[in-house]
Image 1: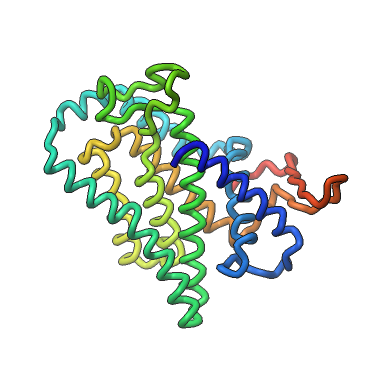
Image 2: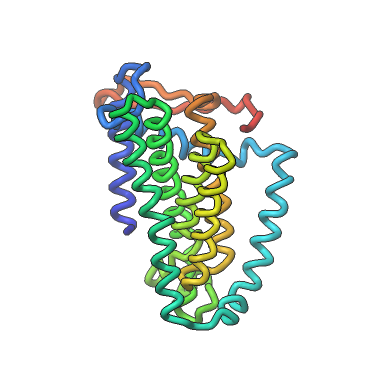
Length: 278
């Protein structure tokens, strides 16, 4: 996705969110209410961006291992990829596997869940399809922003050591390796489905699928191990946020329409007095 397309997408998102302010409050996200879906995505992204404000002491139980693991893996990335060596046939096979499981399968489930749920009047299945889609959009927006911010070369670029900002601002972006798009997408999908259908069989299937994609991106030489760790972690967190938010609502944020000299608009307010995180 180019930066221009991203900016156009964000502009479109903002325009439909403005329309959402005049929509009936009880209306749910759906094909006939895309502005509500856009509002949900905007709420999610606002929640993600401000998440550091809600870090609690208990969050250190996962933050410390995540930071330590990512930092250590960054120092080992080049050596790990060198040890893997080059095998075009293997890399092609694992790339195909990761594309099918990491991109196509979640997208197919989104469509199937929504359509089948609507036809069968299965609100749970329909809602799961919508939540998977929402998590996927959230993941895409965050992942794209982080890739442009880290500007890291992938294992096939340059010196093949995963340099960040290798040429400064010249030719930016020079790489989009961190985080892994496939990993962040499939882990957000897996968390949503596992939360909506918490049986052990479902969890085994979706988390095995996500783990397979994560390893496949490294074996396909598309990403370094640290790229996959970051993508997988953020994807899992996004999936959990989406499941929780649609049930709990936006406790810290308030959206309202306002009248300006140039017409109707909207404002976002944040309650900094609520410190407790999710």
